[in-house]
Image (cartoon, rainbow, N blue to C red):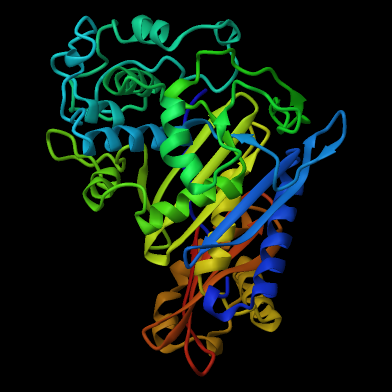
Length: 456
C-alpha cells in the first residue's frame, strides 16, 4: 500500500501566452471537471511556476459525513512522497561526514540478510533485493495492528533477497524503513525531529507532520470498490509508515519543498546531483529511478517525480526543472484514477502548445469520406496523385469490407494537428459500433488529401 504510482501523458496554450486570470480559470475548470468525473471526495492542487507558488486550490469535500469542504489548509497523507525526505536526510548526514551512501548495511545492522553486500544507496534506489513488506493496494488486517519500524526490518530484511544486490530494480518499502533506522542510528536523532529542524521549519512547512497523529481538520480517508461510491476506510496503525511513507501536509507546504528543491537551497550542489541522478544496474541497464525520485519526462520535458499511496489517499509530486515548475496533486480516496490525469492535464495547460480548434467542416469532410469508403464510394478528385495510387481497387475493397464489419460510424473527432513536410498532419478518432479506429491524415495547402490511412 505504501507505494508510488507511475503515470504521465496528454495535450493546450503555453504558459507565456496566458494571463494569470486565464491560467487560474483554465486550471480550475479542468480540475473541477476531472474531479467530478472521478467521483472522488476531493482534490487539492498546488502549482509552482518560475520558482513561485502561483496556484493553490482545493476542490470537493475533506469529509462526506459529516460534510466538511476541503480547503487549502486541509492536510492529506502523502505516502511514498515521504521517501524523498528520507533520502534528503541521509544526504545531509553524508555532507556532515556521519555516513556514506556507499556504506554497507552491515556497518549499522550486521545481522540482516547479506548486510555486508547491500549499500545505503541500493536501499534508496530500490536495487537492494530486500522484499517489500507492503505491496498490497488495500488495507490488510496486519496493518491495523500497531508495530515498530524495527519489527518491520526484522520481519522482512532477514528474508532471502529477491535478487542479487544491484542487478534488478524492484520497489520495496522495506528499503526505506531500514534506511530510516540507519539514519537514526548514525545521527542519534529521530528522523521526524531532524526533518522538522532541518527542512520543515526553515522552509515554513507548518503543516508537515507524522500522519499517525490525526487532526480533526485532516482530510478523511476513503476507498472505492470497482466503480462504486466513496466508502470510509481505516488507516494503518502506528509503526507501519515511518521513513517509507509517514508524512502528511498541505499541497502548498509540499510546494515550498519543491521551490527549495528547484533552487537547490537545502543540500549542496553535489548532493542534489546524487539525489537526482538515475541509478544504473550493474550491467548498465536503466532504472528510471534516482534516490526516492522517479526520473522521466512529460512531452519531452524532463521530470523528477514521485507519487504515494496509503489507505484512503493518493498523492503526486512532479517537478519540471527545465521549466522551474512543479505540480502537486493530493486526494483523499484510493482506488481511483485521478492524480495522474490531473497532473497531466495541468502540465498540458502549462507547457503544451494548444492545438488549433477543430474546424467543423474539416471534420465533416473526413467523416463523409469515411462513410463513403464504408459503402465503397470514393471521390478521387479530393486526393492527390500519390494518394490515388494508394487507393487501388484492392485497397478500396479491403477498406469497404473491414469497415462494414465494425458497424455504424458513431463519431469522428480530431485528436491532434501538427505540421510536417509542408502539410498539415491530423489524427482523428473514429468510433464505430464495434471498434474505434485511428485516421492518420496529411492535407496539402490546397486542401487535397495526400494521405488518408485507417488504422485499426
